[in-house]
Image 1 (tube, helix red, strand yellow):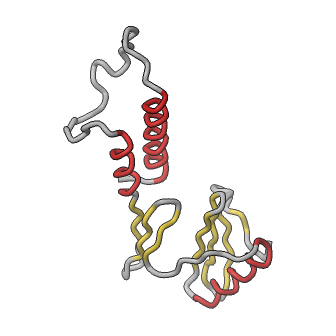
Image 2 (tube, helix red, strand yellow):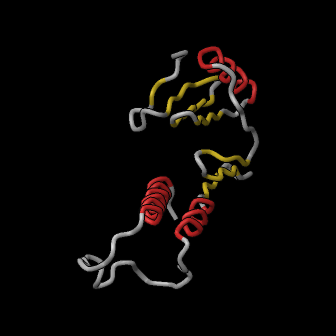
Length: 144
């Protein structure tokens, strides 16, 4: 809509050339991110989106949070994505001491099933699944 073309590789990203520069908008459920070299273009974009969906909460600047990732734009034209907050949250949720070091989680016992091992209680079961999903999100959305 309004001249934006959906990215063929990611259907949650749309691009449009405005004043010779690319304007990009991306969305994930109810979080959005937009970028353009000219702040006025972004102002117009936000007005257009608000005309369809209502008032937006907008963060501006060289550093902000998007989907739990810290986004930081550098002066040399590059940017950094960090998700250390997610990893810290996973360690806190897990609750057990995970301070040791290993070269790989792939030990000889990786696929060993201990049939006599007791089931987790409901709280630990929910916590375990939350930590696994949180770390899956981190590995899917960021790279070291």
